[in-house]
Image 1 (cartoon, rainbow, N blue to C red):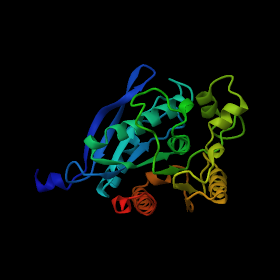
Image 2: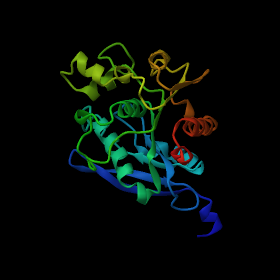
Image 3: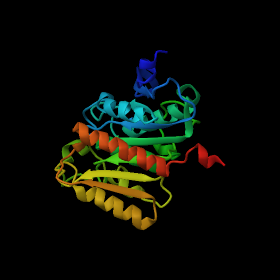
Length: 274
């Protein structure tokens, strides 16, 4: 391998990680410079788009930014709401986590150091995936059933944390996600606030104070509730910014460094093994 190639993050696209709704689910794998690592930390990247739009390519920048910091990153797809109703999206996210753990040797990752990071609706799924690992009703059957979907940490960017059938700018998208006939209990079961517990893996929340899509109070409430419960939680509020503030390159780079700092402090590393 040339020195130039060794200094680059490499990406393998269109890797099948499981199935959902009878079709293949694909991801892109970002490997840090230097080739296949040995026991590296890993991050699953889950894209946003109000559960209806977007694709895994949205987080390509984070794959490269975090890859340069030594993380193997997997940007995964999931079935959108016009294809399948909730909790299919959560099932697909957990399928990706199980695939990463089952293929840890091939990926060069530590199966005990897998984090999940999501943006907007992807952050919503990341939070619930972290909170419900091992819940049979929420695992799905997309592949690698014995691998386990637990994660060591979760990062959530401007995620909806309390879903309601009425009363928010996301109502149209939430109702499409949940489908006709969904009850109040169904909405609560699809809300991260429902799963607050002191034993959750460490959580980092990122939000902006001028967000007109996901009200800032949703994440402030989640932070306060997690902190009061005794969970490990960190909150970053960006002043004067709107939803998806990290699409600005300088803020995306900053956010990647905050993720690195958070995971280095809260996700166990090899030195912790004894």
